[in-house]
Image (tube, rainbow over all chains, first blue to last red; front, side):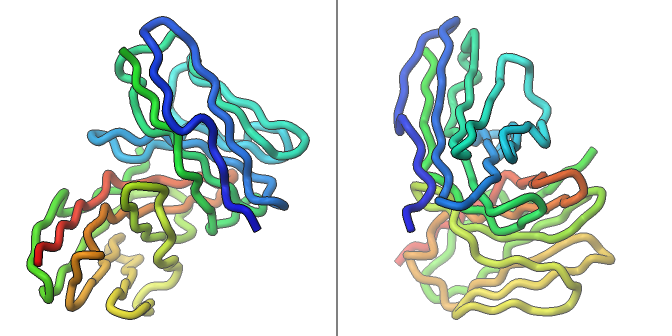
Length: 113
Length: 112
């Protein structure tokens, strides 16, 4: 069974631009969560989708948004990029809601110049 | 405010040493605590703890949870250079969905 995949793996953008990251969960998994990881803050929860609906949202500004498609693939969008958005963005999938066992993808490393 | 705090932030030890990593938490509707190991890639799952006082063990790694004092420890005995990684602690709040709170991690370096 293939693991969680994320594309692209690396991305360089400039301030003010927007970016879309993609996550394909493990086959059969319906929950996808997104995290931002920075050296100073560690992993911070962005949001979680289940059955195309956002179920949970962390404390991030509205520039961060996401969606989930009927095949459970998820995208995350960040608009008006700031330097502080430079981070590793990880997605994790799990079978359903209230499932502690989540599997992480390799992440997308975003650099904002 | 829900939070998870790990200590120490970083640790350098020699091969063969034993290390103890700490994780304390304040999370409403606690459901479980998880430990992950992160090398230069995605975090990989180590342990999930839900009950106090029951040690989980996997080889040289072991972990235990104290729900009264709101903390967990991860022990690694006879450390090896391959144990060098960031160890992440996360608390799962299953109240409204899959809400995980992560600590900032402990960076462990094992030198030969």
